[in-house]
Image 1 (cartoon, protein in one colour):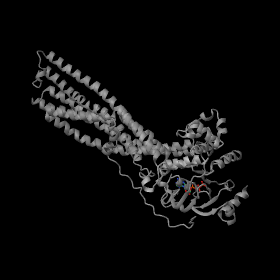
Image 2 (image 1 turned 90 degrees about the horizontal axis):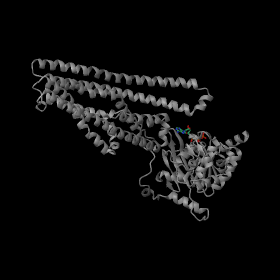
Image 3 (image 1 turned 45 degrees about the vertical axis):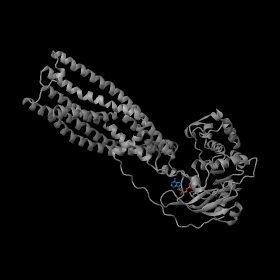
Image 4 (image 1 turned 135 degrees about the vertical axis):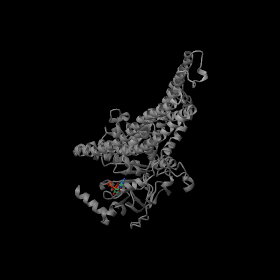
Length: 631
Ligand SMILES: Nc1ncnc2c1ncn2[C@@H]1O[C@H](COP(=O)(O)OP(=O)(O)OP(=O)(O)O)[C@@H](O)[C@H]1O
């Protein structure tokens, strides 16, 4: 067996942490298109309704102007309204006005409902995609991303996106369309006044766009500060016991105060830009009316304009700026929505570092279902032991760094043969758990490769690899749900299989003592179980999966001596014909393994049986002697 202890040259690592450029609004908007496409029909109906709504909207000022022209018997009165009496003409005007009001009222309401419905569906789809994406990301991503930050993006950012639809802010599209129709009507009726209003509109639109951009920047920062705030909250809640035990309340409160103040400062900036937009629009609408009165008045005096048309334009001046004013109201929500798409997009764009190879079979001759076959063979092995032994693990020139060139595993070469029981020992931080993480492909080696039964683990689908290997950690993680669910973890095992797995690992007695046995509800993170009890469940969880390789990372550290002996007896049975890797600090627990690998600062410095290593008088012997002294 090859075992290269001398370290080679560390491999070079590429630095690919280039900043992603900020996306434009248009590109952000396009991100929603694939989601919107799924609701084409509903959206098409909503968009079609824009036409009658906008026409009804633009007709109303015209009708009011016509009523005035009728009363004043002006030449600008349309022939259609010139009836036998003025009153009759007015009735017609009012009737049409009523129809336009009804169209606007009913259609706007229905359109708003449709858009909100689609919006909520889109938001739900984005939330689902985010969840699926986040849970597929490599562990490395979670090392560098605080949980609170992720939770903010998954909950409140997605919620903000939902608000864009829920508050009707999306109606801005209808408002903009209305502006276009109004502009068309104005030019048709009186081009000079129409030009005046459009000329006033353009610089204001520019100013609004400027404020909008500033608001976006400030809002992005505010959301970042909120993430920091949430990370702190999350950290304090999950670590509440340590906070109390070490009296960190005041100290943490000060830290929180700082983050809270930073957040408020950023929010203040967003309020400033938001108010600037509202204020600008408030006075510009009045100036537009004044402009129409001044210019229209002079035309009227020269008898180039009638009172009817002047009144129509006064209404148009208001209507034209109305969408912009509404924009100001919806502005905050829309901009916050863009920030949310940007932040959510950042996560969705995060590449999935560890993927299954699309054509793994072609690359390595690996057959999909390989692990299934092994498991079948394992079942059969109990009665028939003529099968080829499997469960060989080989590390070939493996290097690994969590970040940059800070290698925690250096030039590792070893082979674990089928059915062998191996122990990894070494001082704290030597890299024992990192080896396990690499073996399960939670991280990829920076250099070198890991083989199971001669196949590179990168060529094995992750789901199969992780069924092939079962890992029991010191902290058995518990999900909210019952005991049975925490053993099956959503796989379709029957109740009998769950019971059998628990019996096989000697944990059935403990489960049956729980208030409702296998149906006892466990709280999130298993707060109603002791650390040892959580570990016991982890054994049943591993056993039911019938793994070929079992990894125990300080798996019995939380158990009392009696329970540990019981589990050990069960393990001895379970491990027959299977490969095992055991990490243990208490060297007495691993005395009987086939081989012990001794690690020091990521390097394999010694290997052999307990007796051989004690005789060798190296690091293992020192650790062993120290423990003997202590006991
Ligand atoms: N997620 C991580 N990001 C960065 N560095 C890490 C990470 N996890 C572990 N390390 C570093 O890698 C080195 C090896 O850690 P590892 O957990 O493999 O040690 P170990 O031998 O299992 O230690 P212990 O006996 O204390 O469990 C340590 O120096 C540790 O600081």
